[in-house]
Image (cartoon, rainbow, N blue to C red; front, side, top):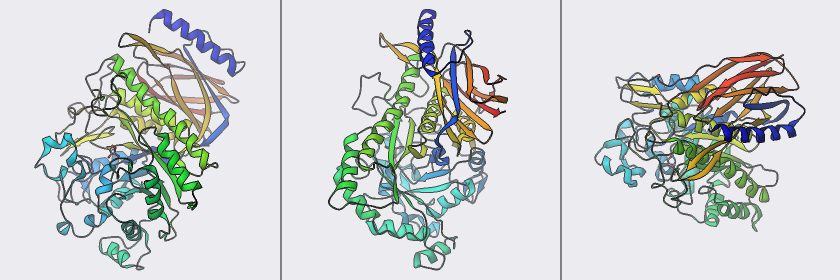
Length: 553
Ligand code: AHR
């Protein structure tokens, strides 16, 4: 940032602060944060910290499932190192089996003795990216070695709640009932319960989260919203419950399509046959930060993608802008939903999010949509989580797309090689927010100015979220500036701190990422912070994700 620009925006930051109270700030600080410790806003659902695993490329096969006879260390076929790392970040919920794959998946193919399971063509065979993979086995020809029971085992080993995405495009509604029966009917009660016992689990899995189709405006059936509403009624009315408190999740819009949500909610809530099913309490939103064309390409999803590793400073800020759009989408969708569901019984389920780049950086050619994860992606992930925390009243579940060997992965692996990406450290740092009370927070930081194809563009200089659990306040924030550290003062409104510790994830190279050769090149480190009464002082490095844990006096 140029000095002149900095002074201008600092003055603006000061003006913002004048509104927020009487505090006198030290002139030397660049940025100021106020945390209103006595103003809790909502509980941050643990499930906001969830993940997504689809049968696509290297996610399930090579990523999660290596098979029981593999030389790769595994627990009943599931990659051991993955389980261990996931337990470090307290994964609350796992979505499976898609994505688009879900609407071509027959759950019955994935149960029973492995040798008897049918081989099918994987949905993603249709993707142009899969052309290079013909005759590549499980990435194209689904062996069904990993099915419902293996997924439930994976959830158990990682202490995660299962979230199943059901097929609405190519299976009848009765299959939805039957999958539920297989998962949830009590031991010994039905033929499907007996089948589940024969497959290893007499006890029901008690699956609470059920997605009713996926992207039903597109790969999930190309429905019109009224048609989808009618299918949704058919699939979700009078379903068996088996004493499980179900949470049914409707397939939300393409990007921020308000018309889809409006027509669906209008049909469900106000038609001549109002639908009153309290189990319907989630509306799915997907947001991929994928258009890095600087506004030039808007209608070709794939062409508009940027590069995962080969990017410049403008691309960096463009990714930040693209990521930040999810907040607008959430607010817009929430407003439309509120027109019909005035008490906001139905919450947002952001079950796919993250950057999406061109192919070419996957760690193995079979990993469709696999991409490298740099410190830029860590900032984007942290930004998304901060947005969800700030909107804790609206978001009940979020699952990052996707856990391993895919778009916004926390882990990249191939055969016996494995490493955690910078995203893993973000989830590790942010786990402290799970189940805490989100707090009102204000940021005042100079805007960042950059050139976007010869025109001035700007982006905010710092943002984040805060939460409180007992005597501890957790503050997380990102500094998206590539050029300068930010001397930051933090004021705790209404209380003081006895102790504060900091953690940071940063790199002086915006392209920094981990590899099989250098698995720990980017990782979190301690961040020095000074606490004095109700004020904390910290130097936030450029291009960084930060966490402070503050013990209140
Ligand atoms: O995450 C990859 C794909 O992106 C999912 O299968 C689909 O839901 C979305 O379009």
